[in-house]
Structures are given as C-alpha cells and as structure tokens.
View 1 (tube, rainbow, N blue to C red):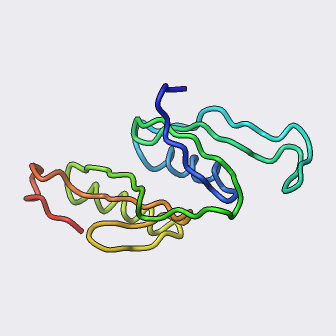
View 2 (view 1 turned 90 degrees about the horizontal axis):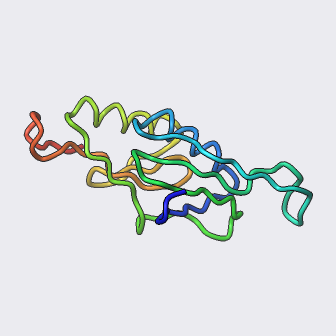
Amino acid sequence: MAKNTICLWYDKDAEAAARFYAETFPDSAVGAVMRAPGDYPDGKQGDVLVVEFTVAGVACVGLNGGPAFKQDEAFSFQISTEDQAETDRYWNAIVGNGGQESECGWCKDKWGVSWQITPRPDGSDGGRRR
C-alpha cells in the first residue's frame, strides 16, 4: 500500500466500485479485499469491509462503512483526457453505469463519487469541455 492513500467511504459496494474503476480507467486495479472474519452487528462473516485499489495510478482504499456518510462534490477524481473521444468514453461509462450528469464537465458515478472528465487544454480538440 502507498504511504499516502485516498480513503473513500461506501455504504456497502466498495468492491463493486473498485472493480468498475479498474475496468474503466487505464493504470487501475483491484488489490487486497479484506472480509469480515465473523458476524458483526451490521453484517455477516465474509462481507467485504475494505478494498485496496488504484484509479489511474492513484492509491485508494474503499471502506464499506454503512449509510452514515455520503459522497459529495467536496471530493472528485479529475481525469485529463487526450481528446473528446476519450472524454466521451469515460463520461459514458460512468453515466451509463447508473451515474448521473452534473454541471461544468462533472458527473457522478452510481456510488455518488464525483468525476471531472475533461480534455487537456493543449489537446487537438482545442480544449473543449463537456
């Protein structure tokens, strides 16, 4: 695990989110999946508690912490793309997998994590944004 890691709180779907990110973005992968060794007040033995993963090279941990906290726009992944086609591919993957469009080039995945998917300003498309 990296020395500095982003920890994202999920209700119960950290592993599903990590696997979606790993399938969607290059330089992304799912690492260790830690499961409950026994039953506990809010879950059963074998339930996923923590997932280590990377998103576009950024080390992350997904914590299945329950419904107490929700994602919001105070945190987002910013993905710089080479062109509009790459922007559209990532945008459509996120929105098409139960996510939603937001404002100014932002969207949210189905777990509520915000994403800024925008072409690099020096790209061949003149820096267009969604």
